[in-house]
Image (cartoon, rainbow, N blue to C red; front, side, top):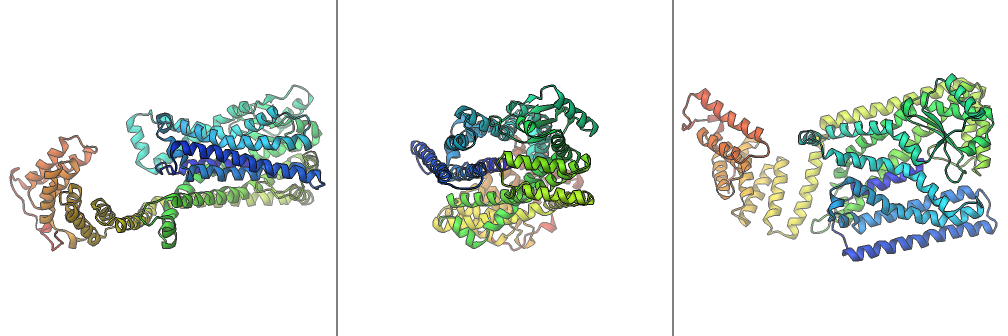
Length: 629
């Protein structure tokens, strides 16, 4: 289940992070044909893999067929992710669908479409896997039952994403003030996501057990014994359910839910038939151990932590990597336009992060949590024999290799050996508990430190890296199209943001050489002369001349604000007041800013005791040499 969850996280992330503005490489009908051909080619490749697996066993291959069959399904799922990435990043599937209004206006529509298209790959895998599964694992299996079990099992991994999409769709219906607050900062948006995720974590288990069609354990001696065992252990749950998937071949147990009212203990019927009372109690004690040690709460924190780490990673390291000339030259075309190479680079970074975080870091915690739950079962039942015997039986019944490595569990042999050591030295259980406590403390410390560093320094660091990359891209586009005033204007704006005033002035001047009536360029150069932090670049008279010309050409509120500031710096406060009043009359988007400007001018007039038509001298604002056009 953990492996499938990781695959789906990669699939959802690839879709969410893909560039929706990237133009499809083929016309719509040709793209549709390429997608159908991709599905057909995928089916042939997968069928060939399972045919080879079946042929190998018919000719005398040794080892567990069930293990190799599962591994083959896993490899085919990896192949499906590659094919899915091809659809998204090479064929531009997302941008092809965006013109559809229902798709563009709804996160649910986008998510459902992505799920449906990826699920086609999975259905093809399961269809190809069925024949060998029935021949070597379960002769009574039916195609309908086999597909239904896989679909039902994986629906639990898809449902949270669809629910989250629905939540974000619903958030659009909130009052505009609330939406503005959420969009005001990444912290507010992250807080909303945390709240939604906690609510989902509490209330999702009842939906999940229905998706899996779980039914209450039948009344009888087994249920009565388990209820007494759970009561004595101080474990409460909403119900004990039969986890009957994969046509009765599932051999496992689990616990779902953070809150007792919405918590469920799941036990597969095959496991009930396989274990005796002592072994079954040991398995249940293992699941209770997860609850007692609050592992599921940490998993919730861990997933929320991914959102923070991913945001920091992509806002910091993406532009940092891209600023290196070797990478920049490889992913940005000669005319300065990001293309497929940049999308592939982004995808590579994303998959690397996912593997490091979930396969690597999550694997460390998951393995140690499983070992801690084993230790709890050993300590609570007073013996390791129950867990050891149950692991032995599960390995035999499931045709599992005892030594096969598992990224989210230790191997069966490793678990048995640890239990045997705990049986000989009970202090090992406490030692492992302390080890897990240290791991959690280290993670939480890293979480707090990274969040704090990002809150304190992230914006300035990110802005610098992003502007450097944007500057390089724009310069490359100018090299390909040197007579384009809009490109020179973009480059000037980037230089202004970086406080590289000399370069900004030169590019604003070049913009105005190519387009003398470019009102925005006139306005921005005027604003630079009026507000530059370096006094050497202040030039109030030139700011006034440029802003007057810009206001004549296009008297928008922000241009009138520049004019007002220029009048103010030249001591003509009445004219500044008149300009800001003209801006306010147009109902600008941020009226509070313009009101503050107006109040600044009025306050100065009141303090000076002058009339509204009086020019006031400001020695501190006298012209510096500057640079004129």
